[in-house]
Amino acid sequence: MTVHELDTALSQATQYLHAARRVCVLTGAGVSAESGVPTFRASDGLWEGHRIEDVASPEGWYRNPALVWQFYNARRQNVAQVRPNPGHYALAAMERRWGPNFTLVTQNVDGLHLAAGNRNVLEIHGSLRHTRCLQCAAVEDRGLEPLGDAPKCPRCQGRLRPHIVWFGEALDETIWQRAVDAASACDVLLVVGTSAVVYPAASLIPAAKRHRSIPATVIEVNLTPTEASDWADVGLYGPSGVILPQLVQRLEASRFSS
Ligand code: OAD
Image 1 (tube, rainbow, N blue to C red):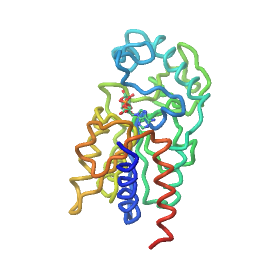
Image 2 (image 1 turned 30 degrees about the vertical axis):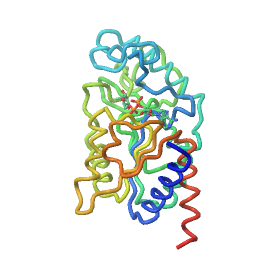
Image 3 (image 1 turned 135 degrees about the vertical axis):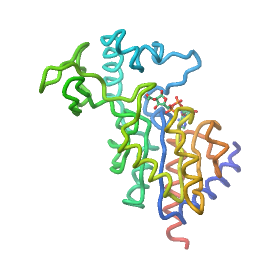
Image 4 (image 1 turned 90 degrees about the vertical axis):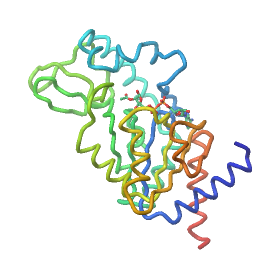
């Protein structure tokens, strides 16, 4: 994308957002890349040196729960050391503008949107901070301290697992329904830093187009075009930590120009 093309696309995106009453955002790993959190789909098919099915599936868990905990403890430690980047802060500024009419749906489990100040956040794939007891089902926020290879529930001593949605598992129905409602009711859906290949998360994009008499405008922010691009009315191709602050800056300026 040339500087001129990006400038034109930023102007279009600003106009759509300026007119929008309700905004929904879908984020993926790319929004946290500039904070130093690795994205998932590296070309070698490995996830931080592990096969995805070994560390992020129920089968992997039953085969070797200690390995799964080692992997998640490492991710928890990594996330404890990173900070939100300007892209996260720009999305927090957007929530301040739209208030309750702004919903942020994230596939990320790193908690960086909450750390940046967003409040209306739906973590549809769970959170690295949360554990779930396999015996009493209690979900608890355990922060980001390492928990060891076989952590036990402080209430009932049952075995704990990460409260993360793994491949082949269903999403929390209540949270998912809220995400569908937000995507179906928005005027603009901003799709940031996701390859849009994991379902049902990616189905929020067609949902925004389908469920209203006036389909939502889809704005994509990514380094490159993705599976979401066919749905996108505007594509902003560059790092989200650079693009999103520019978008917010233009929105602030457009407040005073109309
Ligand atoms: P992916 O790793 O599949 O995609 C990351 C996307 O971010 C790619 O499209 C990159 O081009 C883009 N990207 C990278 N750096 C960027 C930057 N600085 N600015 C903007 N975009 C950038 O990650 P997700 O789409 O989030 O699921 O993956 C979805 C789900 O698959 C994850 O939630 C996880 C994974 O398996 C579970 O854990 C259940």
